[in-house]
Length: 297
Image (spheres, rainbow, N blue to C red):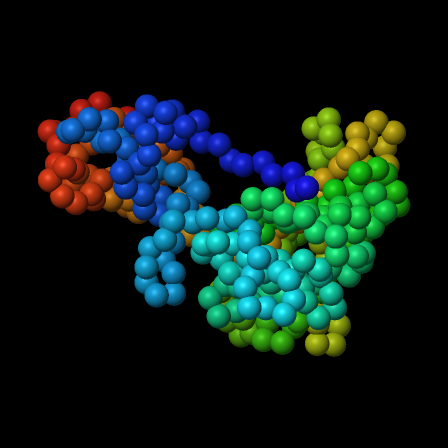
């Protein structure tokens, strides 16, 4: 089964334990009711909701479920800002698909057999892709994280992928593959491989990504450091984590919030008693006394 590590916000857990479910949830805010007159707003770094194609705001649920109405078995998230399709079996005709707007990137791993899949929550694991090697994909609100799981050392440290070059420009910048619509400046997708770690927590960033255009396709090569992987003290299994990211406006740069307007910050919580006007909540039950004890965590 996939190894799923869910992000846990301790402050959110604390508020949930004290006040129950939030009374209002928006893209990056959760409002908890303290009492009849007071509320606490938590600003979250992970998105909670998104606007779908019809303009409706929906809560995000990244749980993978079987795709309906398709001839080949595949898995998609229940409700996600990203349109991702993970086939039960990756073939030469069907790869890993992720969509940004009207543009779809279909990525094809070039080695191994991706036919023995298991899903759990927001992850899928392809077992025995190669000898002593599994591959899993974990969906987030901004992209798809791949874990190449080497259960023991063998001389397998170079990995190849390909995608259709039609309609795309791609280049390597600072060890990342940036993919754009042909002739356009905006980056649609980013392929990166920031880290590999062993079971003792030792880590290395000595992973190189290269790119070549071969006919009508781009070929991506990920070259992990053989010397690091083959060291006697290396504790297996080892994870190598290529990631496909859809760039979004970072919370670290600018956050627009009904609590404090637009400001610079790092997705921190806003704790204290606040007014309904500050949270943007509507209705008489959100109107409070002047707020006190404001602090940023």
